Image (cartoon, rainbow, N blue to C red; front, side, top):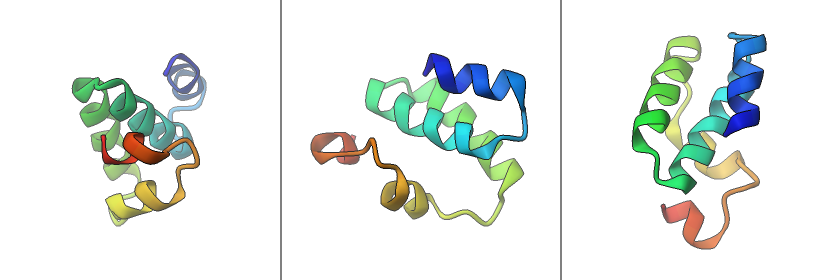
Length: 67
């Protein structure tokens, strides 16, 4: 999550970092960080389906995907 936060700090409009942060926060069980990142992603990309993250994030595997 640290690298995603740093990427967002350096470039607030980098939605790829928001998507990584959402996935990392979900995997870590940090719902507060994940919800805030999802809110920012939806502000920047209002039409992005949550299924996109589920289908496209390569770090999501097995039980992490359901988490």
